[in-house]
Amino acid sequence: MNGVFVTGSNTEVGKTTVSVEIIKHLRKKRKIVVRKPVETDCDLVDGSYFPKDATKLNDACGSGESLTQVCPYCFELEASPEEASLDAGKTLSLDDLIGACNDGVGNRFVFVEGAGGFYSPIADKALNSDLAVHLDLPVVIVVRDELGAISQALLTIDAALNKKLKVAFVVLNEIEQNTLSNLEALRSYTDVPVLKFSQKSPQSFCLKVEKLI
Image (tube, rainbow, N blue to C red; front, side):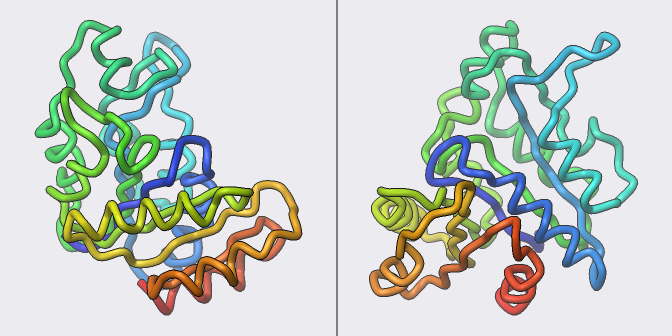
């Protein structure tokens, strides 16, 4: 499998927003597919649960794949996939997610987006980290650019490295404009490439990402 596993230092850090911009840029030169194997907090539309983040990712890559292939496990409850699946009366296994990530990918470059943080529960007795280890893809870590971001980033980097995974790069996502110096500070504490993302200048960010992927 050729691609990256996108995870976060926490929930609500903007993994999908960052991934969409990267995918739209990279698809100009290579075939991209996405896998968001499970999503929670889905709306019921015409009798089926609608995964909002998976839809954004699928639209960005333009692969023509069905949404059910991109995100086969959708649940209504706003909770971890482990809890949401049990609430829906289903036991979601790690093997289910591994199979979904590999289904139909072939030799194409795949963006796999996890659910929540690196150590968030994603299936029955399984964490995002367990899925990342089984897929053995380089990890992209998205961190919200805020007070505490340095600690969050370093903890997640260490967690990934302790699992013997390669960290492709870390993204400091500036969701709200600030004057913090997290980028410079974080770079002084790690050898992992650190980039800053802002909706104001996605193009320059994506050009840097292209050199790292």
